[in-house]
Length: 496
Image (cartoon, rainbow, N blue to C red; front, side):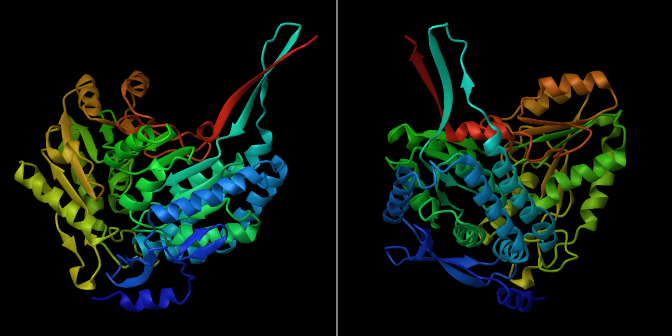
């Protein structure tokens, strides 16, 4: 089986930008080095990206700093910034099909997802923050009669953003949209596995009217470009989405350099809890499956620990397995495909390694468990479920970032809460129950930034997103995200 014909045809419908976008222009890495851009659909090389390093990051930061200090963007009246950002959203929407194709070619997720979810949500994100910026007010303090105190928000300056490959443009928009509307200049470092949409979008931003130097993009390996950004003495903040291990490095780099602001959205090992009084077992089973199998499990909030009360576990797990077995990995460019590829060969091998370890540690394989569509040349793993998992097992403690469910039994509510919170992570959690007391008690007991009751992944741009514990700190989405990109200044005026 080969999907190469579809990849070749799709490549003719998109504009691929591979060079760094600095100060309004595309430019190769100063070293001349490049990185292969491999499509996970069939394993073919579809482009070569500029491999930016510290020298390129420095150029981008200088461009960002100059644009910020000029005031061309940072001091532009909020309503004018709003209009340009709305123009930007319109440009992204006008190129939605192209960007969806690029995302699928680059990352391997089904085209039905990129067309119907990822890119429309990017447009929504840009519009939301554009509309918000001229509706947020500064404050007057409760001053004595002979003074006036004002509390004002000011942009940080130069914001560096290091973004992941699982939702390449959507996660990037959660960073650049609020950073831009608050008047900052931005340097983006997209994941080296999936940089194409961010590079193309930067070009669209310039066409929409965002001035040169305000939005820059430096593709490259994290160990070179990402590290250089986090260590740069003229970057005022670094915002990051990715693994907890890399988040810890970035936090350290911030401390080693100029004590820049750091915000981290890191890993997760989220529990989805099904009580014996679940109001709808069929809906819960569908949610449990898609909480892990959407985007092939490459989702930080994936409900990879499925906690089911022992009295109903066997029957419920059979329902989840039926959903898993119905999901056949397929060509991501096919509109009918619901389950696509993993991002690259390294990630596929990592997932397969965890599956092997799960079996070795005594977990029982219910379904899946191996590579799929190997003759396509792409990187596919079948939807996989383990039963009989102990919460101390590696597959229950470490983030796999692949389509693997670890089913864990529990006796009662207190047992479920203990197991659910027994993790270094705290990004998301959920419970299915008809008991109002359990619903409220679980919502307060679960140590996670997002808690869902009788659903999974309920949210939109108006609600904050982020985690507890080693899932990071700081919030994306909602008006709360603006806090990351502004400084509060107190101005006290003495009256005569």
